[in-house]
Amino acid sequence: MKILRAIHYEVLNEISCSRTIPQTILDVGCGNGSFTQVVSTTYPGSDITAIDTSVAKLFSTDNIAFFKGSVEQLPFVSESFDLVITVLSLHHWKEKGKGISEIYRVLKKDGRLIIGDPLLEDWMSNRILGMLMQVIDGGIFTDKKRVSEYLNMAGFEDISIRLIPNTMNSLYLITAKK
Ligand SMILES: C[S@@+](CC[C@H](N)C(=O)[O-])C[C@H]1O[C@@H](n2cnc3c(N)ncnc32)[C@H](O)[C@@H]1O
Image (cartoon, rainbow, N blue to C red; front, side, top):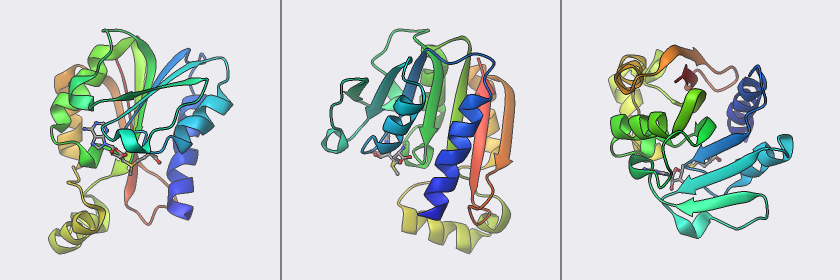
């Protein structure tokens, strides 16, 4: 799907903007792991970990460590990862603030967070259209103001939120640094 390719492309592009190659990467809400595998292939020297609440979707590979678990209670010691990515998952989290705080905890100092997700901005800020899209997608979208609050409260810095091209003005790339 074009829109999926656009968000995955943008996340990969954002990872490549790092000054250094991230050695330890966590993919939160990895689904069937297909994008995790693309990241793993792109960064063969990095240790990749992936987590999802749904174990049924996970499959094992030699180079990716998969865990069943939730972002609200990550089963990793503090300061474990250089980079956390989470794509099209945030709107499914029951406790978004808690999830973002947990990600902050497991990131190393200067580590980066990259989120790709729909936000209730642009045409989706319309109450009816936004509601309709959430029903279709089966999640609860957040907006720029609230996601900034979650990130600030967790302690993140250098927060940036921008629209991803070719996603029908609906998907955003949210980046922040610990
Ligand atoms: C639409 S899929 C995204 C899959 C993948 N990230 C991608 O880009 O193709 C969203 C995933 O988030 C997972 N998820 C939902 N709530 C979660 C939570 N609280 N913690 C971790 N994963 C969660 C779901 O099980 C689902 O597999």
